[in-house]
Amino acid sequence: MGRSQTSLLMAVGRSHRGPAEGERASDGLRCAHAGMPVSSFGHPCVRRRADQPYTPRPNPEEQLSMTTVENRQDFKVADLSLAEFGRKEITLAEHEMPGLMAIRKEYAEAQPLAGARVTGSLHMTVQTAVLIETLVALGAQVRWASCNIFSTQDHAAAAIAVGPNGTPDNPQGVPVFAWKGETLEEYWWCTEQALTWPDSPTGGPNMILDDGGDATLLVHKGVEYEKAGKVPAVDTAENDEHRVILELLNRTITDGSQKWTQLASEIRGVTEETTTGVHRLYEMQRDGVLLFPAINVNDAVTKSKFDNKYGCRHSLVDGINRATDVLIGGKTAVVCGYGDVGKGCAESLRGQGARVIVTEIDPICALQAAMDGYQVTTLDEVVETADIFITTTGNKDIIMAGDMARMKHQAIVGNIGHFDNEIDMAGLAKIPGIVKDEVKPQVHTWTFPDGKVVIVLSEGRLLNLGNATGHPSFVMSNSFADQTLAQIELFTKPDEYPTGVYVLPKHLDEKVARLHLDALGVKLTTLRPEQAEYIGVQVEGPYKPDHYRY
Image (cartoon, rainbow, N blue to C red; front, top):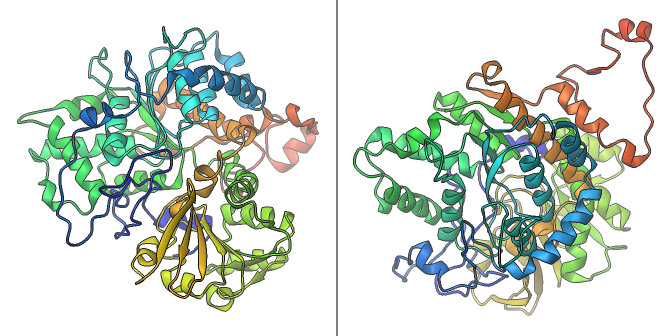
C-alpha cells in the first residue's frame, strides 16, 4: 500500500478515540493510546489494562447528565452562552466562503432542498456552521452531529443551536448534538440523534451528508442486523468502538424491529466528504449491500486538490506553532507520504525555512518529491537526526515506538493523515519506564528512561484540528460548495442516480471553482467558438475529460 493520497482508499479507520477507563473527560481528553487492528468499525477508543475487567459505562443520557452539556429542546451542546461569540465568527467566515454564499444567493428562491431532511455527520466547526445554514437557506431541514470527538468548536455548536434569530434563553436554531471531548458512547449517541427525526414518516432522514461514513455505517449495520434477526453479542466485539455500536443497536433493535430498514428506505442518497467514507461506500457497492446512491465528494478536484493540499499547507504549521511555539526555520522536518496532503505539508514546512525530507513507497510520488527539490529517503535513514516528523499517509504503523526511541531529544511528532494509527502510540505507552506528561491540552511529552523526551501532538490524531482549528474558511468553501451541490444533485434527480457510487459531475466541479475566482481577483480568458471546436469542448465548459488529473 502506498503512502500517497490515492493509497488512502485502501485504508479504513477514523481519528476519534475516547478516554481510557478511569481517566477524566475534559476539553483535552487523555487516552491510553490503544492500538488495535483496522476494521470496518474503525479503531478502539478505550483501552483497559490487561488485569482490569470491563465495567459497563452508564448509558449516554445518564453520563451526559453529569456534564456541563446543556439539553434544551432538541439538541445537546456544551454551553449556549458561547453562541454570541460563535455568531461573530460565523459572520467573519461567511465573507471568506464566497462559494457557499453565492450558492445561497443563486438557489434561495428556488428552494431546491425543500422537503430534504439532511442528517449531517461532519466536524462541527465555524465553517461547518456556514454549510449548515446554507442548506437551511436552500430549504432543507437539518440535524447535525460531529464526526470526531475532539473537533467540535463549542461556540460554533452553540451558535447553530441558538440560530441567527434566537437567544440562549429562546434557541431557534438547528438540532445539533456535538461538543468537544465526547466519550465514545456519547459520540455514537449523538450520531443516532442526528439520524432520528421524530416527525418524519420513517423516523429518519431522506439525505445524509457524511464525513468518514459513520452515519452511513450505522444505518447499514442496523439494516444488516434486522435482516439477520439479531445483533451480534457484545462480547464478540472486535474492539471498544465496535462494542459501543453493538450496544447501541441492541438497544434499538428488538424482536421483529424494522426501525433501520424503514429509515433506510426513504434515504435518497449520501454525499461523502472523505476517503475513509468513500472507501466504505465502494466496499459496500462491491459487496452488493449499498442501500442508496452516493456521491463521492472527496474526489472532486475542488475538494482533493484544494482542501487536501492548500488546506494542509495552512493548518499544519498553524497546529505546530500553537502547540509548541518552536521555530521551524532551520530545522529538519520529515514528511511521511507525498500525496496531496503530503505535498501541502512539505510546502508549508519549506515555506517556514525547514529542510524537508520526504519518505515514500510510491515511485511516482517519490519522483514528484525529488523533482520538487526534496530529499527522498527512508525513515530509518533520518530518524536519529530530524527535528520534526509528520505523517500524512492514511496508512498504519508509519512511525513505530522503536523509531521514537531513536529520535533526538525533544523531537516533535505529529499526524495529519485521517487516521489515528499512523503513529504507534500503543507501543510507545508500553515502553518500560516511559513517563507521559501533559504540557497543555493535546501536547504531551514522553520521557524515556534515559531522560530523552519526545513531544507528541494531539496524541497521534489530526494535529491541525486537535492543536489548531483546521483548514481556513476559504478552502472549506470549496469543499462545502461541492457538498451542497452534491446534495442538490442527489435530492432533485433521483432517477438519474440508481444505487451506486458516483463522482461529482465535472460541470459542477468547474462551477465551484468559478464561484471562488472573483474573491481572488481572477479574470478568465474566454474561448472563441473556433478554439472550442478545435479542442472538442463547449465554450462554457467542461474543459477537461473526467480522467484529467490536474
